[in-house]
Image (tube, rainbow, N blue to C red):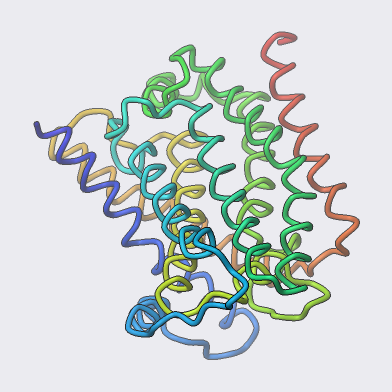
Length: 312
């Protein structure tokens, strides 16, 4: 009973913390660029304001346009139930790696469909760019987390992988884990439309990818799309912290282990948000047709990680 309650709480925490993570990234970027920046709680205010507004829908759209925000939000909630955050036990018994990749794909497909359903030129442009990048994102993501499954020998469940790697201690650190972690980090930036792949704070038609698919949404639909995007970033960070650097994550439901895990996980998340802000402050967005080069590098890193398991 207690592990189930903890699993529910950590899934809820992943969703509730997502706007705070986005706010910390934005605030840190502003500080690094010499600006004051908005409060770290501003994303909560934006979502609350959008939820109180009605949605304006183009007459050329169908019921699919209205269903996309619910599909995107639902897929991220299910993914939050499958992801170990502060405890390796998860709610979803089907939380294997294949299901994880398919949920990310479902989210991307739904967003692309929503961008096309809007009927605007910008939506179609953003959707086509998203599909171009997804060709290399998905294989790299699947290879990176599959490497962890083989390295841990615990099957394909994310909670079991995290628990197994945590029990291995420093023996888990090696070329395979480092290469897979580097590949996953690049995939994190690409999957969440962050610099250098996309600039989430711009609406310039020549550069935007993710924002182009959201231009036709407003009100509650836009609130769900924005929140699901924040949850996706937080889930990626949780996966990076609990699977590639799992030390400190609670493997039992003991109160002491949970408290230690909360402290360690908070430190990991803060470190990742500050690092993400630093990367986005130092780097600039690359040209659109050069982004496949970065994604190819991510795929090659994950492939070398898989090969190193057998060579070494």
